[in-house]
View 1 (cartoon, rainbow, N blue to C red):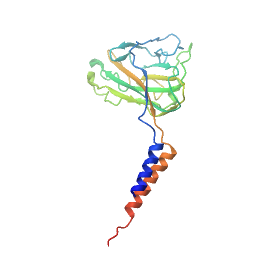
View 2: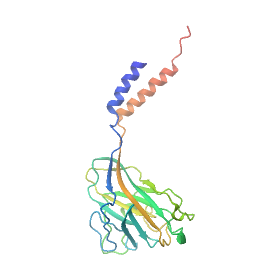
View 3: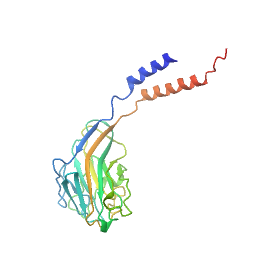
View 4: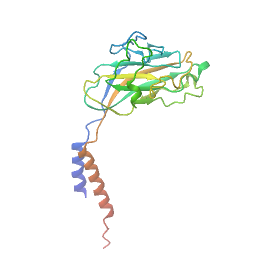
Length: 237
């Protein structure tokens, strides 16, 4: 039994993913924030209103990027060029803090981070012009705190993480923030913001190690050895 387990341990070490999941910092906003609101989009690394009938503003803040909005239809997006380092599976995360105006404590009732691999800018010269890439995808992470009961400024900072998605080396990432990304309407969960704002920081792309067929085979083999050992009758002599 010991010999079998030792052999299997060597096999597992040979095929298991090396090290921990690697992370790539996409943006920590320490170099400032570039934003162009209603002019037609087209540049990389620039934050735009997510639709022509949204009216957001962003600015650098000591804690990251501050997002202000009048409310109702809302949201911003930017496309980061060639930020995916290698083919594989990834998650995107951001540290998120939500500050609610005491007089408009239900202005922000949810907040989301979304990503579209090789997403496109909204179409120029049309009204309204929305981002369609996010309306058909489920790569959306949600702030998990309670935002519908007048929390005001007591909401904790959370690291919001998207579901796992596939990307290839050199891919662009369209990254978006809004109260309503997963319906494509960009107007749900939002009322009058007043002085409410959202602070985001540390946009991070994290590689998710894949389980290889060989690793799965070794794990199954370990289970069979242990199960067989447990079923073996004891010698009562």
